[in-house]
Structure formats: structure tokens, C-alpha cells
Image (cartoon, rainbow, N blue to C red; front, side, top):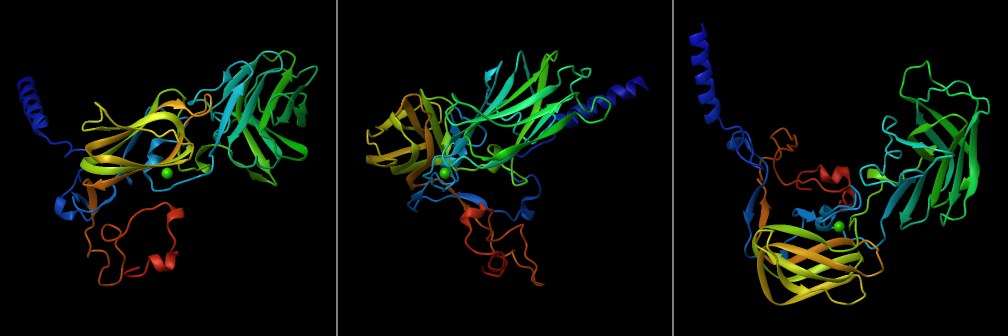
Length: 381
Ligand SMILES: [Ca+2]
């Protein structure tokens, strides 16, 4: 029996070492004859924007929304995006991974603050008017404390300059709810005396004898509806760096291409930098320095056509103090690079059914689609 087991193991090991677990990244894993999706083929003749929809990479990004992939999505924006800064009385400004901890609609994730009258703060930065708010729901993880002699309170203040604060609402309680109930925490509603639209809100906690306040959510509300100021609900098609020193965005064109024009659509430009080219995305050579113009559109015509697979925008100095770079689109005009070849013909079945496993259709951001659903679902539409 032991001998048989060894033999079996040896056979299994040999079979496993010859088994093909994957055909490679991006390769259809099933029978190629059943594949109805588009295939990529190099187009060496058409003069076009070679960067459109190609993968883009970054030295850093301020948050998980303003990322490099947005510089090749074909959407050019002019308006300053909106972003948030959050901080607490004892941690200071929160890092990228913690920034949305009390703005993420998740009452399980929290940040703890302690000390005398600790607070959490959110600042709405960037473009657009600050939204109107008339109510705030403040959620805390469970606090186990005996009924408090002096009670406890939450005070919400607003500010537009983070120097002068004005109280907009408060909650006062005598004990902490939920100590004997299930669930991770509790929420206290704070109705404001009147609607306000501040850029910053500070939520301060106080009670004698409570050392730690686990703050899990601060929900801004207007007329009964939650107002999101961060996260995926706030979309702007631009990349914003985390820092303002040396930063870069690079694009993989997919194959060695020839190009003679690079377009940059800035929202907040670099004062100094360059366009670089590479065959491997590692070793870069200078194509042309960025212009010293003040405008937000750079239309860079190269003195002679460049060849390479990778293009990089290197930023070395910010235009204004330590402001982060914001770039909405990078276009690289030339010839070469892969394009998607559609497998047309299999789209409609004889009974009129629309097959989404092949044919001339694609997934697009809703803002780029002009036609309505009825038009889109028609044959040849
Ligand atoms: Ca864009």
C-alpha cells in the first residue's frame, strides 16, 4: 500500500509539471475557435492617437480616483477636480489608505481619536462650490462606559479657512447606546439649525472619563439625501500626483511606433519637465523639454519623428509652490501600435437575439455615448 502510494505520488508530480495552467496573460483560456471577442493587430498605416485606451503608469497618485489610467481614456477635462483631505486631533492629516475611513459608507472601518475634546475633520478641496448640508449622521463603534455624570456630546463646526470655526449643530447624551445590542456601533443624527455650505467640517467629542472615540462614519446629508464628497461618486477624468517634486506618467503604446506629435491637456501644469521615449519602459531618452508656456494645452510637434514603445511625461518642478500636478489627457500621434479587430457577423442570431459575445459593440463610459438604448439595440445601430 505504501509502495502504491509512492508510485501514485510520482505519477501525479509528473502530470502536474507538464500541465498547462494558463495560456498567458490576456490570452483566451478556452478553445480559440469559440472566441468571439476582438483580437489585436498592429496598424502600421493609420495616423492616429496611439495612446488612446492604452495602459498608463504613474510615479504616485493622490488617491484611488485620480489615477494615471485617466490620461488615456479620451476624456479631456478643464475643471479642477474635487478631492478631500481628512485629519484628526491626534493623528494629523490621514494618509491615502486611511483618508476615506469615515467617509466610505462602511461603519466597520474606523479611526480612533483620544485626549481632551478630540476631533475628526474633513476638508473639501479642489474645484466647484461646497455642497449644501443641513444634517450630519455621526457613527461610532461601541463605547463601553458607565452612564456619565456630566453626559457626553458631539459638536459639529464649519469653516471656510480652517482658522475661524462656527458651530452648526450638536448632540448631547447621558449614556452610550447599544452596549447590550448586537451590531458594531451606533449612529447619532445631528440636525443643523440651518443649511450651510462650508469647505471644512470638524466633529468634536467630549465626555469626562472616555479615553478613546472610535469614529466610523461622518455622513453629510442635505434634505434627507446623503451628499458624497469623496470616493467613486466624485469622478473627474484626470490624474493628480501625490507629491509636487519629481513625478511621471508613462504610457505603453503596445508595440514600437513612430510618432511626431504629443498633446498634453493639463489642469495644473508642470513648470519644468520633459517628454521621454523608451523601448522597454525602463531606460528613457529625452525627446523634448516641456515648454515654459503658461497655457494648459501643450501641442508638441517633434523636430523629427521619434520611435519607441513607451512615452513618458516627466515633471520636475511644479508651477505654483508645492501644488500637485493634474493632467487630464496625453495624446501621442503617429503610426503603429495594436488596434482591436472585431469579429463581425456573429452578433445577431437568426431569431433576432443580440449576441454580446462578439460583433461590433464595446463598453464605454456613459458620458461618451450619445445614442439612447432603443437606437443602440437596433441592428446596425
Ligand atoms: Ca482623461
